[in-house]
Image (tube, rainbow, N blue to C red):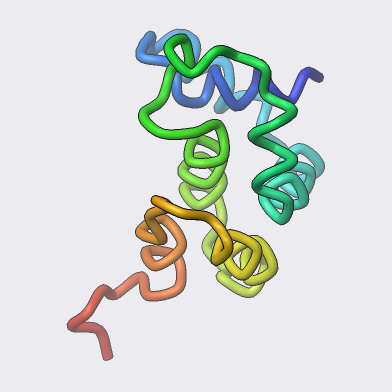
Length: 108
């Protein structure tokens, strides 16, 4: 499976593309996506889609993290990826924070 195509489909504005991506996510694919998130600069470099044609606001890494965090409920699985993202500029940790603190700021 082409990782770039999968990530792009997960964030495509067309519902049929997002449905296809949701169907192909299994544990093996999810583990591969998490490993890719642990190398954000390499992932952005590997996605050769021109910035103006990328189907998600931000970088390919932003799309990857949004998709991965929507599918993972155990933050421990994402810890290495979150730490790797610290070096990035203009990166929102919101997807990671939603997984780390599912109850939000007013949780138990």
